[in-house]
Length: 78
Image (cartoon, rainbow, N blue to C red; front, side, top):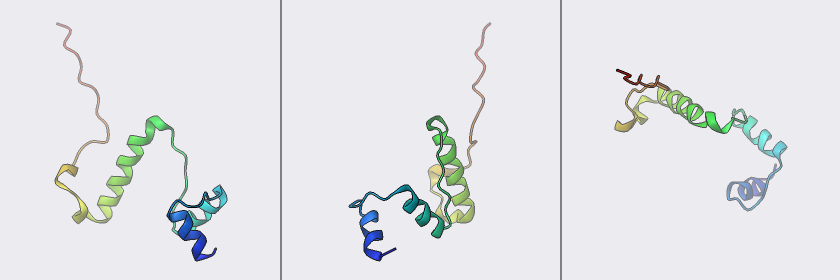
């Protein structure tokens, strides 16, 4: 693929075909996947945790250890 074509895609000046995006992702050792919209926050949290595990110095104070999910507190019915 020509450098000019890659540059146009990066700058948003060219709409790439899905096969082109898949090829670029493959070269970058990335996997292109579709995620159901309701699961997007979970996937983002997993990616963030993986990234921080690779480079803990990149963590900000707001990224302290936190659960990926929690069970809603039970309502007091008394």
